[in-house]
Image (cartoon, rainbow, N blue to C red; front, side, top):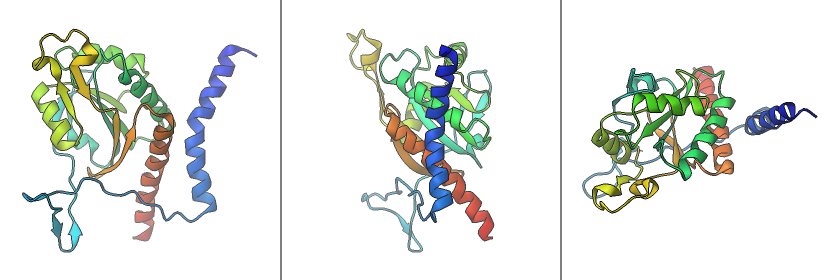
Length: 234
């Protein structure tokens, strides 16, 4: 058998299995599964904020960065779309290639769905210029206007990661000048976040773990289906 056809066949199966699972669940069983809202807002005492009997959850704050084409990317682009968000850097030789490969797979499943976006923000913006990000995007076959690789002011990105997306990030070289290995310098999470159309965080996944990313793919479908159900109930 031609190796190219074999490779294409394997890739098709890998891309299709998570979506197939969702279709089976949707067609042959009534879906009562709904994704939780994560990260409640807290007061000065660390208690969850409750308004009119309902817990208040955080939403991703407004921000502006620059994408791999040198265009301004505003958080308003996320409005009305489901977004998979992550933090990475192009020189990363450990977890980032795994995460980017898994995101390529996610992109493949939802390639024809314009309401699903991917957003990878660099924690090494001094090195990760527009041209560097563009080359990296090509390497992972990022589809234009679907998968955005973002750079910008370092402090703004770090504040956004920690305060907005609730993910840890740090540049250890700022505190230890003896660090030579780039993978030891930058500390960031392997987590992928699923953000809904209103900017709420609805899921957290290990971007290096295939089974976790399979769950992400299924839960993206669950979230998309919930919007269809909301429309039909009106």
